[in-house]
Length: 67
Image 1: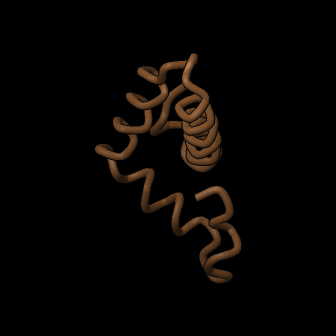
Image 2: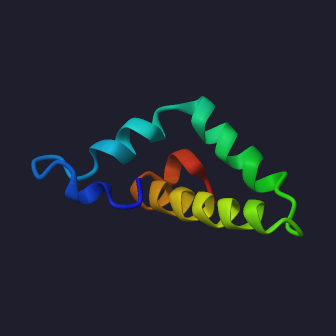
């Protein structure tokens, strides 16, 4: 998702469009960010990646993800 604009030249936002429509995934991402143990380095790195993914999805469809 972080580099999806280079996957399909004819539709650079295909991956983001697909995942913006998956409510279960979006809820899982939000839950993982909210429940991460910030004292655990592995979870902190995982959370950082999730935040980048959420940011990219929000760039594509801000109305779906909200503020």
